[in-house]
Length: 424
Image (cartoon, rainbow, N blue to C red):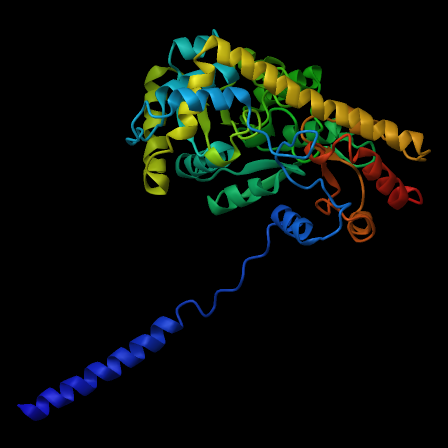
């Protein structure tokens, strides 16, 4: 009996040792992930000791002193919320009040679709979460479909639909020579795509180019989508932040609604309320009727359940408090216009400074583009020179975050850009 006990102990010891070896090798094949190009820019900027350094890579608003901003309407909403509400779970679909107010911004205050309850909508983890939730919905209920994505686009769009296992195609959007819209190429791709294709569209302030179709061009795009039976999914990350007017920035969506399209919309409050870290947004899908909307919403909630169960409460409370109070909403509209106006003013200042330096190049595109980003047209090599010689940091595609441009650094930035581009 003693012998068999000793044998058993030895066997258990051998198993535990081999098991330890097995466990230690589970993740041996894992390689470090590539660095995010935008976060990498910020890391390099923070590590640079130069007092002249400038960061125009960050995708978050800064005031004219280069400091982060919390809107006064947000501070007031937080004062009202503090200590007055519990921290219970929200429903899987999120805050009903926040969703209702958010739909009014996209579809219109007096939208017939809101009244007849034909929109399936859920609170999402900002715009990224809304896009991902829709991508998974597309994969589940249209498994043979693809998504057409503009060239270029926000880099994370590719990651989102890739990880949802939706095949991707691209369509022409940006015209490098004019630094504007390749409208002819875009329309050709819309016409040549298989009938009933899914297209990702930026509702306003296209990221990274800042190039938007005109109202007339949007009408032509909508018409061609109708002819081809395409589905438009709008990512609207900058409503109000682009022009300073939320109604104007929703014009593309309203055109598609007028033309009878059933669309999808991702909305975010990161930029237009400065709620970057609160991760508050909305996904909506316009359906044929209330019955279909109920079914679609139930499936969106079912997809959300194993992802994150239900969305966070604090950001939703801030948004619903601001949009649900007439005075706070007016304050927000003034503040979002103030942010947009500062960005527009910095575009004008940067262009004027470059022209005063006698640049041989045309810089009209700086003021023609809109939103947080300016697609400068600079090459990766020119961007590298800006960093090495002038301590100016941006992504290598030449995208300038206008939020990082201030009255204090715009002259220095213009001079540096002039130096690296004057022989181009």
